[in-house]
Every structure is written in C-alpha cells, then in structure tokens.
Length: 283
Ligand SMILES: Cc1cc2nc3c(=O)[nH]c(=O)nc-3n(C[C@H](O)[C@H](O)[C@H](O)COP(=O)(O)OP(=O)(O)OC[C@H]3O[C@@H](n4cnc5c(N)ncnc54)[C@H](O)[C@@H]3O)c2cc1C
Ligand code: FES
Image: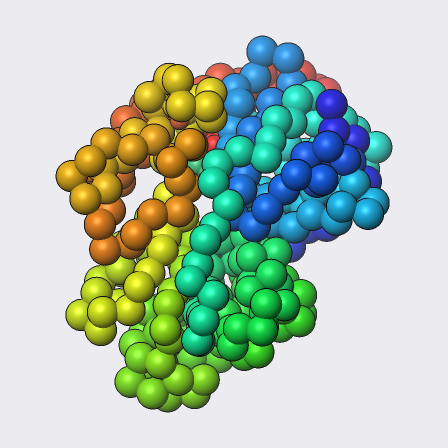
C-alpha cells in the first residue's frame, strides 16, 4: 500500500500525487516507472516516477485521467491508500552526459522530465526543456521545470503562451540555431504521435534521440509479452528493455497500432463504470 500525502490538481484531468513509498524511493532512478493497482479486482497500470525524495521516502506521480483506472486514481484523496505500488521498474535513462541536452514533454511526459533533467543539470550538462500543450492552462509544472534546467521553452497550439505551434516546430528552430541552440541529444516523453514527430525532426539532423515508449503493460516484468515493440527490426519488451529506446529505430506504426488493440474493451469498461456510478448516485 502507498499512502497519499499530497494531491495537487494540475489541469482538470491531471493530478499530481506525492505518495509514501520509502523502499521504491530509495532505489528509484530517473526514467523508471511503477505499476499500481488502485482497488481490489482493478487492473494494474504503469506510471512514470516523476520525482522521488530518498530522505522523506516519497515518490511523485502525475496521472492523466484517460480511462477507468486513471479516473479511480484521480478520485483518491490525501490519506487514502493506493492498494499496490510496485517498482522501480524498467531501465534507468542513460544519456551520453555531454553537450546540450534537450528534454521534450507532452501531457504527463512534462512531469516525467522533472527528476530526469534535474539529474542531468546536476551533472553539469547544459539543459533545455520544451513542453507543449493545446493552450496555456494545460501546461503543467512550469515553475518546477524551470528550476531543473537552463532554459524552459513553452509551446501552445493556440499561441496563448510561448511559441505558437507544436514542440517539434520549436525543436526545429533550435536545431537551426535559434534560442538555446542546436541540441547534442534529445529525449522525448509524451503521446506516441509527438514522439514519432520528434524522431522525424531529429533524424535528418542526425541528433541522437531517445523516446520513452508507453505500450500497454500487464505484469511489467517481461513475462506477458503485452508491451512488445519492434526496435531496429528486433523484438523488445518495453517494461524490461525500455521504456527508453533510440527514437530513430522505433517502429512507431506498429507501436501505435498495438496501443489501439483493446479500444472496444476499454470503451465497454468505461461504459460499465459510468453505469455503476449512475446507479449509486442518490436519487
Ligand atoms: C512506462 C509507462 C509509463 C507511463 N507513465 C504514465 C504517467 O506517468 N502518467 C500517466 O497518466 N500515464 C502514464 N502512462 C499511461 C498509463 O499507463 C495509461 O494511461 C493507463 O494505463 C490507462 O488506463 P485506464 O484504465 O485509465 O484507461 P484505459 O481504459 O485502459 O484506456 C483509455 C484510453 O487511453 C489509452 N491508453 C491506455 N493505455 C495507454 C498507454 N499505455 N499509453 C497511451 N495510451 C493508453 C487507450 O488506448 C484508450 O484510448 C504510462 C504508460 C507506460 C507504459
Ligand atoms: S508488461 Fe508484460 S512483458 Fe512487458
């Protein structure tokens, strides 16, 4: 069990939780994730370790509510327990620690950059973070991210904050030498289409790039095969071989297709949950 010590809404559908998990915090490294089960009989879902504090034994996770389990989690309050929390899982991020490193985050991926970019900045690297969202109010953790890098670049689709356009538009400008300048390496965490676009933007410029893949996961230990991805024509399991992979070698077509495999079942599960909550609402 992991007790919730702090809850902070970041957007209407995104919540930050600080939870008590001393053993996981003691072993956690940037880029790793946990698998949580919110309630008895519920499914297990992977969540990135956005941050950890070894001294007070806590983890920070950021949850974007997209379906039944993330909504159950989002509804928990301070003092509630997350039924199971297992981790740290996956391989820690290994970036060649030299030059100008640019971290790119979309959605919950912006939170996932927190401990990762802090660690790289502490090693003395020059760091830039680019985060993007549809509009200003959906950008998350701006102050915290500004504190862990040399330059923070904001992008919004509607131009309400920072660069008007996608993160890849601003990335292309940096590659051309604008602002903090050309990256020596890039790491991207966020929705699959964004990571694929980052890969295409850095491929021609031959900038080494890593992406954190988020396939469907079940056990998180390499046994079920659910998180299979193809990297450079080889089968890999994101939970044990990843989640970070060379962006230029990922078969994104297949990864995106596999993530849509259970759309019908996910919808049925959301419909069932909606029926249950309507049935229990007071008349
Ligand atoms: C290594 C890893 C780290 C992750 N870190 C985070 C995190 O820090 N914060 C966070 O909010 N989410 C994270 N995710 C995604 C999260 O696990 C899924 O959103 C969650 O499992 C959805 O469960 P659900 O029951 O709420 O939704 P479901 O009903 O299962 O799905 C609802 C919708 O979300 C889509 N979806 C389901 N699973 C995924 C997935 N793995 N990736 C992308 N889309 C998915 C479905 O296609 C569907 O459209 C991570 C995934 C992985 C593999
Ligand atoms: S989640 Fe089962 S093999 Fe990766």
